[in-house]
Amino acid sequence: MGKILLIGIGNTGRGDDGLGWLFLDEIEKRYPGMFAAEYRYQLQVEDAELITRYDSVLFIDATQELIPGGCAIRPCESSGSFHYTSHMQSPEAIIYLSEELYGYEPDANILHISGYEWELGKQPEIKALDNLERALKLFHETFFDKSNTPAQTLKSKPVTL
Image 1 (cartoon, rainbow, N blue to C red):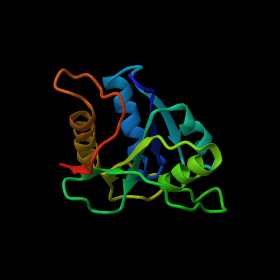
Image 2: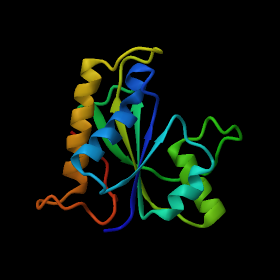
Image 3: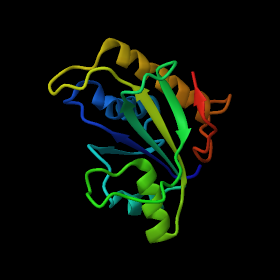
Image 4: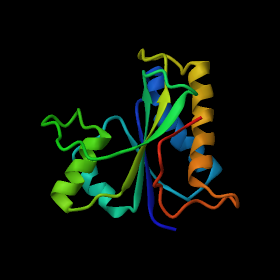
């Protein structure tokens, strides 16, 4: 199997913003040791170097977008630019920096999970946790074959449940 990195973006101290981290926690329980995982409050320019070590990258992040079915996997392509402040890097900017600085573009996707509550100190909403379960199911259906073996890379077409 190719080397696969999952990057959960968010903050579990801010309600549904922590869905990316909760996703990684569940992946480790369900598929121990199968994937490399990184937890991020936000993406940093240094993550451009990190992703060069992997064949595939999946960024997992909560979104305020109300996605039909509660989650979606979308291809992550280079943005063609990046932000000069280190606290505003998008997954697409990290792909761009990896291409520009290291000449490397992994297969990359973003798993968006719809969230509803973003306040500091709040617990995740029940409906956001339902979306998390849908995201875990979507991840399995998209990247595993019928024998429950993960794909060599996480290259996908846009998929929603």
